[in-house]
Length: 120
Image (cartoon, rainbow, N blue to C red; front, side, top):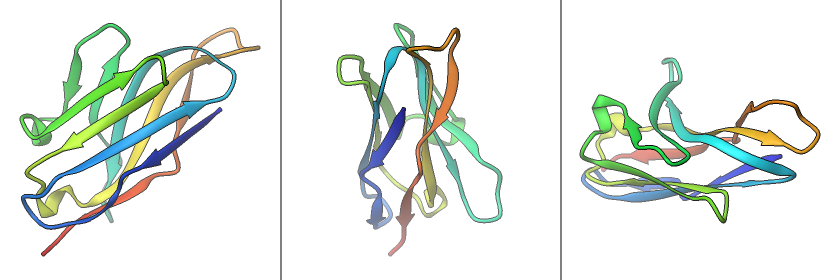
């Protein structure tokens, strides 16, 4: 199973970016998909997550600015980020709780991370 992120980069304060994460492999089912981030010297933190068929959850720091969505046919999760601030600068990681062929339960998988830098 692979989670491949894309869409990171350098953006000015107030700008927008859209991250994508596609899960591939022998996937039977995906429960939760989400995004975490880790800034230098800080712990990894939840940004947003969405359970299959459920409502999204957001960190207070991104509510009203970020929107998470998923395409269950494509096994892809998106993070639309608007009104970006310098404090949003971090490596953003995709996370998925999924069930693969040959497994008896769901397991956690992570992407390799994509850098988001908000700077003028």
